[in-house]
Length: 352
Ligand SMILES: [Fe+2]
Ligand SMILES: [Fe+2]
Image (cartoon, rainbow, N blue to C red; front, side, top):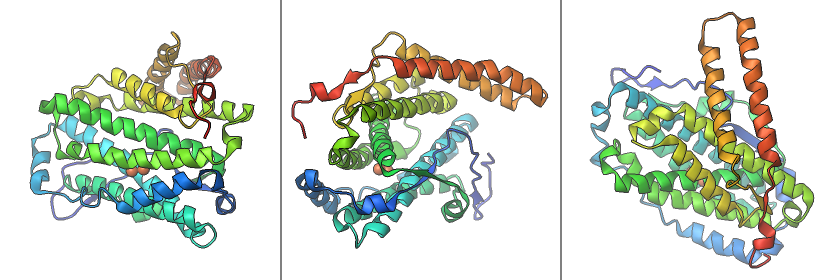
């Protein structure tokens, strides 16, 4: 990515699509309109009240502290940070688009749910906008209007949306808070004021996750049968594997923060898995001796695949070189999926 651009013109970032690039989703709006909230109505109304309060109303107002920070970064850190901003912005924007469409479609047909999504739109727009402004400090911006029109949208049934958005909000919470806490202890690595905002920011994501937890618990078929147990394991493993692969691909960013990327990845996964026991019927046994070694091997093989892709050898040689790595990854993921999970319902103090 080109980062040296003369002002005042602004470079439009071109998003490099990979399997790990955050996706945009659409869902079954009819099912959402008919969503029965009665089992969780009290909790939902309490959360709605909390969201209306808008605790972080003034949190995302930029201060002068951002000026000139970008000039002091070496090129490697600068590129790693821009890549981080870009992917984070797309991820926040993906939530914004899905919630916006849900709020629009549900406004008259399911007003309670419609208002919840409407309020979440406000938060995600703030988050995406704040990241885009941080990119503008480097004279780079994402053309979000164009991306909205040109990117493909993946259809997920409503049930899948509930599982995956719950996980992405909670993993987002843990990512932000763990980086924030680390930088509180190691302020010498805080190379941009953006990190100061992570503490309150993560509380937004935590609240969003709690809303999705309540929606999941409002639908007993999402946690009281064998199918829901299999789906829970599948989505937990998918989100954790994506996280491990992405963290390893972005190791320059964690190096710049002086962080151990592997330890950070494992802590995020461990905490998100524990938190998920409040919503999901089963969680993964991350303490199993094979869990992290296999996940780690997948991340390493992914880096080798990337190196082959970027090499100049002929295509047929690339395909031959990639095949054993791909098979190895599939084998590891399958073995990870089959590790005996932990029954979260059995340990639940109170059946919601
Ligand atoms: Fe967000
Ligand atoms: Fe969120």
